[in-house]
Length: 110
Image 1 (cartoon, rainbow, N blue to C red):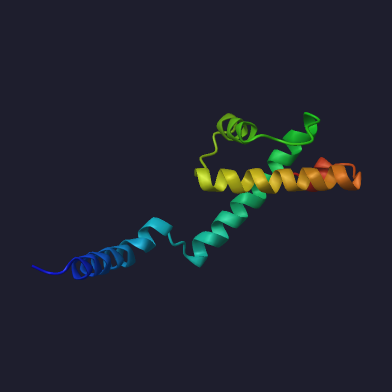
Image 2: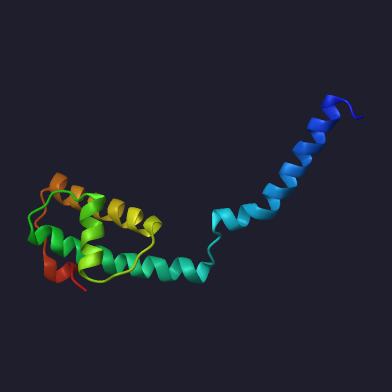
């Protein structure tokens, strides 16, 4: 029988090997082509959501507002990208409020 430390060390090595094998799958490695495609999609959606937000005189949006907009317009977007869109839109809305800028939908619309 192996000493306890040896058994623990072997189990640790096995776990580390399994993690190294599966980690890329869990992290969801994204190709540069996919990143570019997602960025273009987010830019397009950001403009559309900003138009909607300013039309409704909103100074900020909730994640539910984003989800509702996507459902209303039949846009399928993974949860990860919904959160990114939420942050982008609220950051932009905050900039408009802080700087006192007037929102011009014609320059922001797609």
